[in-house]
Length: 424
Ligand code: PLP
Image (tube, rainbow, N blue to C red):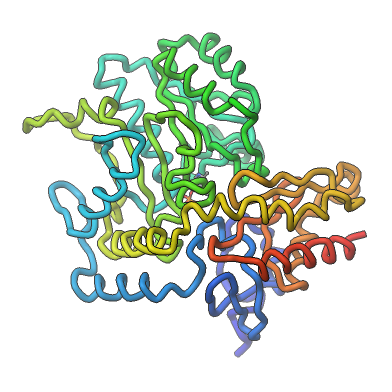
């Protein structure tokens, strides 16, 4: 029998993949340790994307494996549906609430970033409905932002290709240019402040191109939201857990979001888990302290899964013990330095690095005009150089694990331009 793991006959449907191209060129990974992963043939690769922006702690973390295995032996199921709870979920809620922008935030747990986003949309709309403002449903997102692939997240996300071909998406959603704080104010006024529920803001846009906000942008949009009574939702699914050098990511700026979505690095990526932090004044209608309070009829099966929560608790311990959260900031200049050589490459238009441990490199417009698949070809050439990067619309992204150091940055500095030379 043919090896079904690598041949075209395997039924596995890969997300966001050209299945015609994947078949026959699958990269089947079998092992990971620190900043590196190995494929089925034993070839080693630098994981320069921390998987999909989430293996922040590096691979093969014994402490997380031990915590998850121990929890599975103790209590392997039962999340937090209805009045059920488990100890890891309660502990994790306490730990996450302590990271929140202010005291008394509530913590809603789920399965990943996309459901944290959809939960956020429902929570803001339910909040206003409970406050007697059911017409306040409109949600504003930013162009190029990515908020996952669930219904609301697809609609609020600002990458047009991700929202087309599926028929009508949830309505009462609009977008503003990602780099203009004034545009948000204008859009709230256009829709009518009394109809706008929330503004969703990925502080550094990730999948949409690694686009840091202009100076003053985050503070300005937070203030605009405050002035109009619009809830400010910070999508920190990528930004959190050290990627921007702080716990939440949004706490790089002096703002107080009403809701914060978290996922990815929250477990070091070992087990899927997402979380939503909700400011007390937003959650208040649902926390009356009396039986008969309004019920938020929402939540996935795996909300508060004990094994996922155990993984997150072990991950939080590792971030703390190894000082990996501030390391995201310490590494931002070394990463920018490592990629600085690319700026002079004739095929490169732009290198964006220096805010957090992530970077985006755009190819020149004529390269993209000649071959829109050039980012994917560059990614493939990097793979041949032993480095895994992420292709984006106009180039590639890198976001290595926070345990990466000089050898890994040196490898990036040499492999990326070498791979690019092969595109010419
Ligand atoms: N929000 C942001 C900023 C993301 O980058 C992602 C995923 O990449 C999501 C939300 C969705 O998270 P998930 O893929 O876990 O559903």
